Amino acid sequence: MDPIRNPFAPGAGQRPPELAGRERELAAFEVVLERVARGRPERSLVLTGLRGVGKTVLLGELRSMAVRHGWGAGKVEARPDAELRRPLSAALHRAIRDLAVRHRAPDRVEDVLAVLKAFALRANKADAKLRDRWQPGIDVPAAQGRADSGDIEIDLVELFTDVAELAADVGTGVALLIDEIQDLLPDDVSALCAACHELSQSGAPLVVVGAGLPHVPAVMSASKSYSERLFRYARIDRLTREDADRAVLAPIEREEAGITPEALDLLFSWSGGYPYFIQAYGKAAWDAAPADPITAEDVQVAAPEAESELAVGFFGSRYERATPAEREYLLGMAELTQGRDESAGTSDVAVYLGRKPSSLSPARDSLMKKGLVYSAERGHIAFTVPHFGNYLLGRADD
Image (tube, rainbow, N blue to C red; front, side):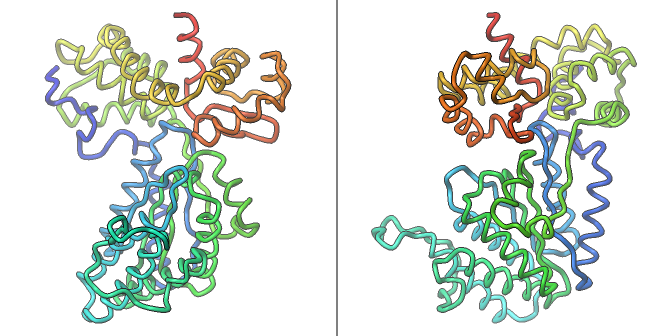
């Protein structure tokens, strides 16, 4: 098959396969947009799930939906140990520019931009030298006395309020999308919850849409006890067999090609229904197939190429971030679970490794901070990456 036409290549096709089976989430967000635009209260949304289930792609589609409805929309990717103020400023700047196209009062837009600039400039440390100070690229003078106290919770409430009122002027809203939300600093999580609480009280048209790992609800709850009332959590999981087949068939059929039922069986078996793996195996199978349709033999021939790509780009890039002590802990988890995608007891890991539980706490906590494992339930730990246990056992056998 022509590799140039490969519909599984990154960015190929009109609709990525990761969105197959996500109709419920898309329909629910459509309702959120309509309700908020009409001034009715609605909770913000947080997508949770393992890596490789397509949360980021879904988040991008939700942003596109907001834009198509005339909303202002901005997207942030949280990073460990990085404060939210600076990337949030850039995201809301984008959202305000979206709204400015429809707003009939340029002075009103500039007033909100002035508040945003005041908020953004607080990202600079007080003792930073002039040449090291970040300039947000907002071409209006910074406001004074609004969203510039330096207290992120106070400032975020004031900024969100002003941006939401700007959206209300044109009868729409603002969607702020935050990926990897579990990586936010505790103070930023607290501020985000406080701002969402204020917005829910006033009915202001601004919603936060987050995406993160399965333990995000616990992170939010630890910050503010009332967080469960502010967010609707949607668990994003692997695809059903029907949706997984559609994720394969739809892009292939757009290229007027085909695939045999036996090939679909193999793709589902090896991918486990995880969208990232479906795309990896599908791409390799397309490239390996000498003719139409793609057969089971083509999938078998392509499997080593897909697995090699996953080993480097998906599994290996994460494994390389772990220290020797952390790798020992990861391998212990993999051996205890025999490579299955299930949790292991923290005390069981300690017994298996012949160590005291307290001596393993630093490695476990660091792995959680790096996003390689999460606490599935009290006293249990699990991989955030599907099939990671199998990958680790394969490395141990090499």
